[in-house]
Length: 432
Image (cartoon, rainbow, N blue to C red; front, top):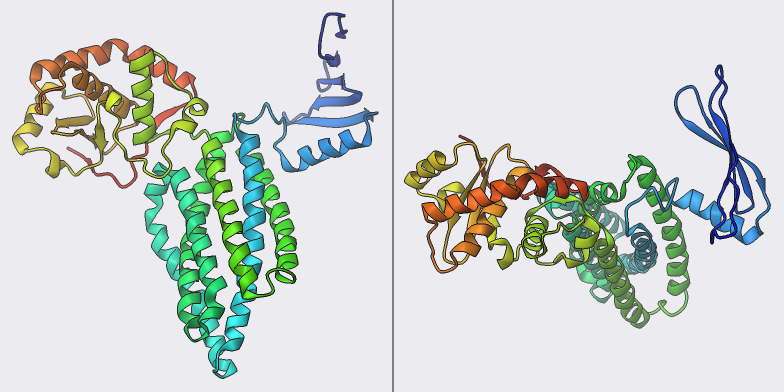
């Protein structure tokens, strides 16, 4: 079988030749844009590709080779929206970070050499300085649940901490007698930054995976990082030997590189369509659904997220606050009353003067959180004046939620949201 171009087509269509051998593997040849490739399914099910002919200009082949080495197979169809912008700013982030690290290392060596102490004392101070980085890693390792809930925020915070630590190192020659204190504090911040950056890497990469290609995404992302780290080291060496050879030069270049670094990682995170449910994203989904009747996709919602203050209340979604301890929210009598009203649900709601508290059961999923959020939002719409949740209003809101929840959930899942779990950070949960 062979496809031919028609005169009305704007784009050239690949020519496809498919042969099926009863005793052999399926293979075919595709010709597109002056490139002929042979595709074949191996006995183990893997697809192999062999280049037969390539008559494109050299520049086109170089670009294609770059994409093959630094972008996932099948790009752009194998990744979710926003991956190119994420990669562009990630490259700029690593370039500026690597250049800044060269300046900080030069400053540390200079500061260590200025100290009026024996060489052995300088070595001990250097070892203690590195030990502070491990302390920072241990402390930050206890915050993993919060990073699952807000990976974007913690990724930005990681780079802020890293730049703070680097800044302390750059400034260390100004206070040679405080070398250990300044370098130790800097390495402590950088240790926390390393753990936060590594811990948030997987949920960020997962949000771009489209065809089960997480390993390929991870490998190509690290290749981009390595390439631009090397370029950044070259830029840093050039700066260190020219305009940054003096402390005044470092004071000018350091803040500029840091600003580029933080801006780049912020734009990376804004472009990342994280598809797991947390309090902020759930509230935004519910608010837009009640307003428009439609569900936002991760790509639609990403630019509306508040990356610095994700805990803000959204009035259109019922001003719901998740994660407060059960004993701070409910009196014992209210708990028994709730169990009688909605015994099958895995959430509890309590209305206060400014917000509605939602406490989730220990094994509650994203579906349970969505159900509770919708009930709370309907309660807020039906009775805005009261500070108490009446039984009648709660029943009406629950019935309204039940009527629309099945199609709502189906649309949420169709948009790519993962509803099998709910990331509420270190929020308190309960178990009967």
